[in-house]
Length: 344
Image (cartoon, rainbow, N blue to C red; front, side):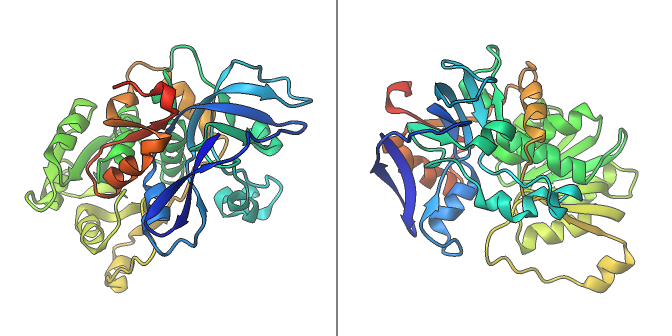
């Protein structure tokens, strides 16, 4: 079978291996589709990630083999799954920081999400595998894991009806927040360098869109919040410019949620002013298994047709093109599928 692995900086290799053998409690899944996450491109193009690196975690597939003792899943059933599972008995998990548990990053699927066949260890089968309803297409189901990340982030920064939020960066991941905030009747402003992304966000419920570098984002936020500034700023892209924008747009006592980051990012800001304004700085790194079924239930709804965000579909052999498009910001969302499933 074919699978992808990043062996050196700047490239992803198509490798060959035997189909994994499964043990008790495990599943073997044939890949239907796997979304490309910005983290995948960071692992490839950023030297801050040591190599080799496994790739792919926004997965949907069809069960090909069931290990001894597994009764919840059957051969031929479509499932979606993610790549990390915490130790639920650890201090981290018991007190709300499951992604910080050492077991979380140590666990993974074999040999990664971009593989014709994938072995799911027993702990993944127990916690991380969700059936895909017949009404949810494969290209919608790949959004379960990233939507789960957004749900957990909002759990960390609860918003109430009547509050306001600014999303900085409405690419594939930032756009997922728009319907979530709409459902909570939060007034949402979006900012991005690409005007066409703003238009789609407004179709999905955003109250206003600002082209970064052209509009006064802070002024627009204050205009939609009785002059206060927004309650929460969600940073899906983190650099000095976006952080300064967040500080200008958020109200006193508000929250800046750092949702997207990359190795080597250093920020310069006046901590005294942050202290005086009681600005809350919150980060959210990943989803947890309990958010995945919640995400799938949302994907069953017709107003969560997230497959609209997918601009390119490539085979495993062509995946390097997809990674490059995502890295250069030339694709809204890329999905990788087995070669016999590519539709041109």
